[in-house]
Image 1 (cartoon, rainbow, N blue to C red):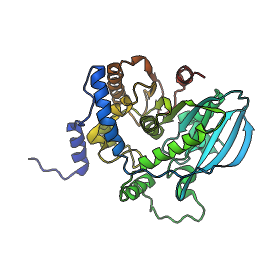
Image 2 (image 1 turned 90 degrees about the vertical axis):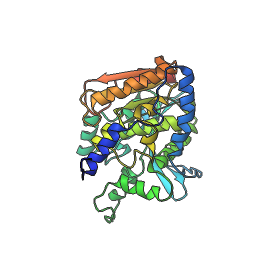
Image 3 (image 1 turned 180 degrees about the horizontal axis):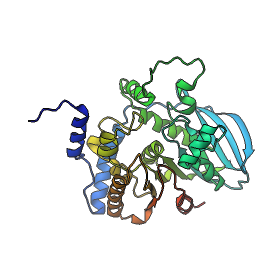
Image 4 (image 1 turned 60 degrees about the horizontal axis):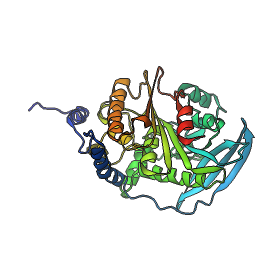
Length: 348
């Protein structure tokens, strides 16, 4: 046996040879149904012990009108000892309940801010331009009630942005630190974020201007991860738009090391790959956006992923519920099909 001292090379070789135990390999609806019934509970188990919900006790700290919208900043509790900050935007002329959308932000310093159109600094404005990132604001302008929260470790929940911050992280990735902290408690950071997303939907669906039976979710990059898991874990979600999160763990994770502690669970890749995660959303409507020039999730791997999702939706006999937007652009929201997709499936 050839000697090898590179752990990086070891993991790449391991991933190249690995076949997940529950990778979909069927053709019929019966095979799809059995696969989903077997995989989904195992997948949910990888999230670990979930936080316990507490009364939201919501507080609207600011309310203003702009862009033809009512805009609010809301605080609510997600568990004992922790709260979340959210923006909730809605049209200012609502006459009857409208569909709602959970807009998930991606990995970055600003959390929910650019997603909801905050361009108040040159850095925020550039962030929006670079990723066409203000989809939360844009969908509110289209007539939806939109909520966006900061995931744990981002935006207003990033302790590094707090006054009098002491560098307890010593330059380390905050997602990985929080993942380790959660792991020693039998929990996962991804599970915690799914819990917080569920709390955000609790708040949104409790508003009299929202139709709780018409809820969608969308997000870019890590926001695509959260879109995937929210759709898997919360049956209130009726349609999902996954933006630039199509790939394979062997490629973006093991080869490119393009993931963090917010995006994975223990044993996840042992069970399945990204196409399986997307495929588990079937038979609900799914729009997948892939940028030809995306440098985070390369187009060849992304399209390979989508082709497997197609097979799953075909086996589930719901091919008409799956759409692809392959666009000439980078790591960004295309926006070409989103409006029609949600209009069709949430019936705005």
